[in-house]
Length: 305
Image (cartoon, rainbow, N blue to C red):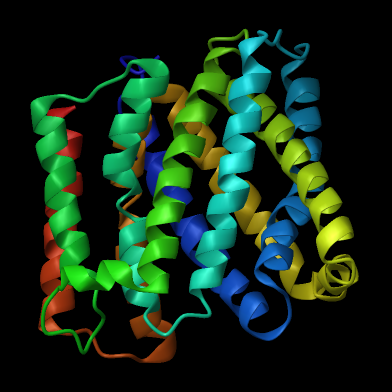
């Protein structure tokens, strides 16, 4: 599948990064003004689930095919990925309340390197030497972008703050979710990447919605009503989440999760551009250098695969 469509996974990875940038912006608004971290996370799943199930139904009807057979390992990979993504998203949304948000997000993006290790542990998938070099170059770009406009350097003591801890934790958890989702797509009995992605996504989001519903009912009972009250904004989180997740899952069905996440680093560039275009914030020479290195990393990765 990868040999026949060498460009598709790159395009959908970039599309996923774009959707994810918009979704995190919306979640930041809700987490800052309306919902708790868990509530903002729940809004992502509960408002995307109806759209995903509808999309799956429409695809099966229009393609005139039955639901693919699902292997037994699907549910293990799916549950591991679903749980890891819930915890990772809570960590990221919690970052929005931190002053040193930029440093935390940078550590979150080290998920690319962590995905290499997790992919090797869970699926036995490695990366080539040139591929690893491209990923490492991308990390350099991320470090340049890590401190924000006022940063004069990167200091490893930043690891000890709460934002960095949340960022590192989310990176590990996102790595597990990405590799688990790729493993789950392997257990769907079809060669077509789109139904593999749709079936996996529908199952995973349904699990996440049920898990979060139970959690909020037991631990934050008033938060479910708050999520419903925030529906005018939250429904857009659901739509962008569906678009981003579908693109990620298609990419995972086609390519090694570490390579997909490496291309997805374009999200950080998009975030800086969005900040400049929508909030009129100035881009510094350091940020320009970081974006240039990151772009070089992504282009190098595309060329060596």
